[in-house]
Image: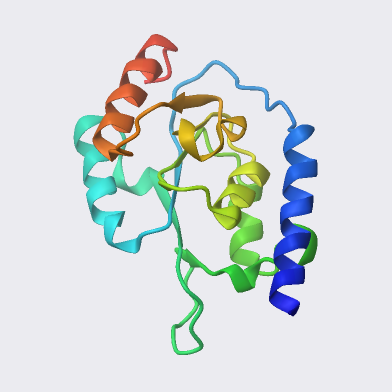
Amino acid sequence: MIGKLKQKSIEKYYNKLIERKPIVNSKNGKVKSIAVILDNESLVNVIQANLTNKLPFKKEDITFLVQREFSKKQEITPMFFTEEELGYKASLKSDNLKNFVKKEYDLLINYTKSSNLYTNVITLQSQAKLKVGFAEVDDRLYDLVVADTTFNEAILNQELKKYLTILNKI
């Protein structure tokens, strides 16, 4: 019962906040810091290899945030978050999430393949200058959307490279 109330509260806050999404001033400059949001931890190494090999990014400039199922047995690490770390009205309970959304990344890439309330809230609250993701998730979140019904990470990276080059960001 409490879980459903909390989820409804987060959904209500998300819908209210997405309507008045703040416009982040994207300064002209090269992309130096990248944030990546995933909902599948097995993709971390693949995504990192793709970003460092096919795009001119360095491994140390990429920060990952991966959503995983809550388990009392798992230790808390900065790379992972669970739905338990979000409170009512999408308040952030952990310092890890607070620091992630406060940091002004040059680029945020959301690789989630289905609409996920928790990763969407983090994406929305992030102070990243440029946000990229799949159009079918919720295109209101992003500055640059890639329409690919197969949700292929390679296609997203290919389109990202093309548009970052056009925008003179890489």
